[in-house]
Image (cartoon, rainbow, N blue to C red):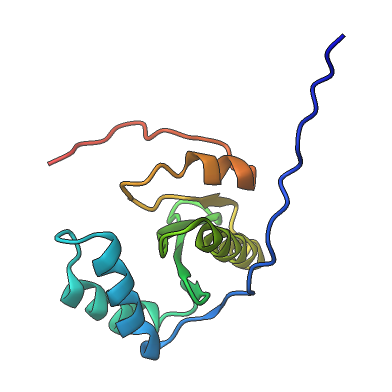
Length: 151
């Protein structure tokens, strides 16, 4: 008789995320240029961060660790009292250790959404990387858009 043993996943101790601010724009730009060469609009993202994300902390949540970050947006439906928290951007430097840091940022986003009384949390970040293992690890169910038009 064979006995199958499943190993438990033991997370390394990741640093606790802290809020981002305007001093982090240069760090974030370097990271995104490194991860998305040729596809990153530096001035557009810097404008968005400085003029919206850092000024509207009532609807944006931003946090980072030494090697990862997460920016989430709280949206309210005009026909309902419900709101939803969507991850707009999430990323980390290369390396498995840094992925654990990104998970701690995503957990901080989940907790922020819960504290803001959001009815739904979505990992909506558009990325070239497959986030399904991360989502499954967080216990998030997969959804698909009803309709989408790509240009």
